[in-house]
Amino acid sequence: MKHLILTLALIAAPALAFAQDTPTPDAPASGEKARPFDKNEDGKLGPRERAARHRHRVKKSRERFDEDDDGKLDKDERKARRGAWRDRQLKRWDKNDDGKLGKQERRVRKKNRLDKNDDGKVGKKERRFARRYRKHRESFDKDGNGRLGPRERRASRRSAARKVKRHRAGKSK
Image 1 (cartoon, rainbow, N blue to C red):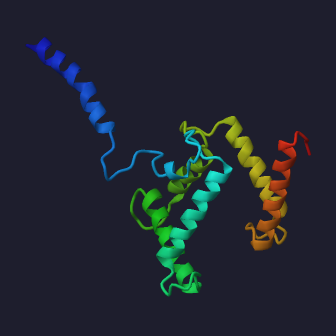
Image 2 (cartoon, rainbow, N blue to C red; image 1 turned 90 degrees about the horizontal axis):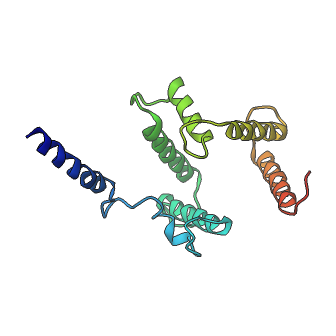
Image 3 (cartoon, rainbow, N blue to C red; image 1 turned 45 degrees about the horizontal axis):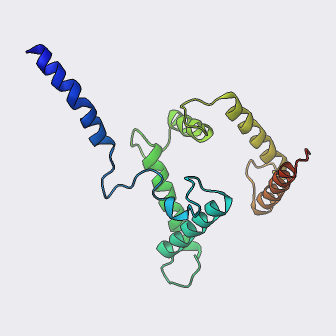
């Protein structure tokens, strides 16, 4: 009898596991949201496809928060959008539901942001990238307040774009 139950359990386990992994019609499969933007259907989003997805997201956000339908977000509408973003971040990272991110929750959030390949660890390359990124940002923080203002951000992006262009052309520095 024990062998029969064990055999039935072994036969039923893969079917149950498969049933759990299949997405429901209202929950899209991973990557399904990106599919309309993947024009060459290679399963990856290239730079132009990512830019198109970004423009689409900005447009949807503007439509959602633009209450007076003038095509622009005024101060109050931007504030509402920021509040909605903050609420989504809290919902995602606030594990103890106290309405703020504690030290451990911030640490987990930072680790997940640095873990680019989603293996659960921040590896050597990921740490090196984080150091280089931080050093790059610090070099453009002219007023030393720890944040990049609009002008500093533009200068940082231009510099990064020049570096990428030189790298693609096969030149170093």
